[in-house]
Image (cartoon, rainbow, N blue to C red; front, side):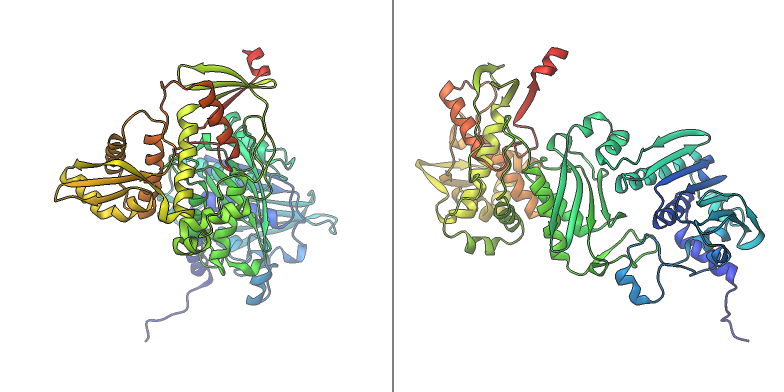
Length: 565
């Protein structure tokens, strides 16, 4: 007798449950996605003991027809596709028809549903995949599904569940993401009889942001609304003051489905580069809308992973969407935004990804860091606070300009522009070359990165076994009162202390460090003319908002704020 046998349906469903239903949060996910697919605008989710004892979802969707109640619990029973080709035109959250069968096989499930065409509701109860009750009952239009005693017949899986508080946290985090993707749906979560999260469905994502993240985050977000080649990106990004140490607040939706994709993660990182600070991550909640044939979500049971047909297009579009939002903010009270940022953004992207092409395109010395029309402000110079913050008044607002951060941003942009547009003349020669003796580690770093150092304006050469000769330094406007030798040593020390393995990280840190060490420092006295020159130069930049380490160049205080104080 052979060893291969056909598994019975219950065993097959339990295996499917192992792939799709690992914990109560998966049950919540599948039921909510069905509600959304049914057009529900109001959802109530109730859980008990972290969802182990009860998960209940009530919606006002279109309901399930009486004739479909039984078959809804069968594996691969779905109303959303008929053949594999339909996947290229499917926008629903679910389509495999596995969820209800998988849930029913490891719990007691009760479904009550009514459509607008039915006079009464239908009720069906199943346990361990077997239907034990069918009846008619009174019901509102929509569906109510209760899942009780999850994994009662699979004790091994039940044993691997976390404590109730942890399982509740997973559920709440998922529901909050649903609310972010669907601000036009009213959603309520009740945990052990207590309402712990509720949105009103008014369509304003900033109100959902406030509920989840609080007032500070809400007041520091920037709207995103960008469209290119049938791809529309909407949502919010955080301004650079709320950059994070981790990626936990980077949330991406694809046609309102939460996904993870390394291409999108990399694109977001590059878009925030030079604004959030090195080692920091930007805050964003973004939804990408695109035709279903642009991607494939059917590569993993959770549908979290996604494969794009044109990864370069997706990468570029997300980069442009985030960068456009970063460049759209007011500066020193001037709310005029520039409509011609696309060339600058494309140039920045090529600077990060296609250096050889960049050299060819910018051989005409075209400067792209400056605005076509300089921002115009009428300001009153008040003075300098703590020998660090320049104070100006613009109408009914006071601005504190961090003189070091502001000059650092200016030099950072100049260094990049010199590299991009004047590759062969981005150094200024020193009157007397400097010979500097270095440690073995310093020499090793220079030998490893000498081309990078030269590309960004240092004309250096090895001078024996333990020294270098500096003939020229980057062609930028120096205001720091230290000599050029000390600036080079400071840069070298910073680079070695924070050395990164990635060449792009090293490159970014090097540019930022050169700008930082050459910029005017705190406690350096500036004349009124130097202050005005710095402000006028900032007003010409496309991106004047932060230093390259992420510190804001300006702080705004309104008259109303002062009165409240």
